[in-house]
Image (cartoon, one colour):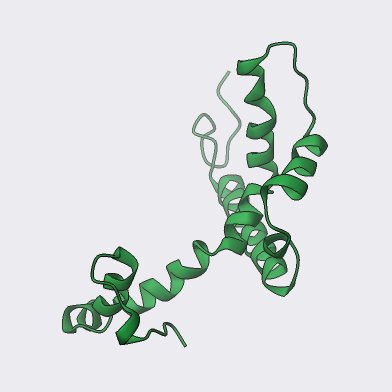
Amino acid sequence: LVVEFNLCELNHRKDNDLEVVWLLCKESWRNARLGEYFERRPALSRFTLGALIMSEPVVDVLRREPRRISRDTHIDEDQVRGVLITEVLRREVLEGEKADSAKKLVARAAHRVLRKIEKEPDPGVPPGGSPPR
């Protein structure tokens, strides 16, 4: 099941409702938009966004930013994670089967990017040779 909706409850002023109805039109089927919608929907789920917020790069940025407000402030990553878990994010977003699958999705995407970076050759090193001196 990709999308489910009730025609009686749709509101023509809401972009989300219009997008769902647009998926049924002829142009959408011709351009295979339903598949794109199906792939995009998990990326914007609350579980995936929660996993992204709890990821190391985002927590690191959230740890550094308060220094702009107060130079004397030193905050470590565990403090940021604690506040996010207890006061900012809802428990259902961080725990459960869907949250675990979202964490795996974020981890796979991060590893994919790292592998791609590792495979790219260094522009200063010629292929099969040593760096210029």
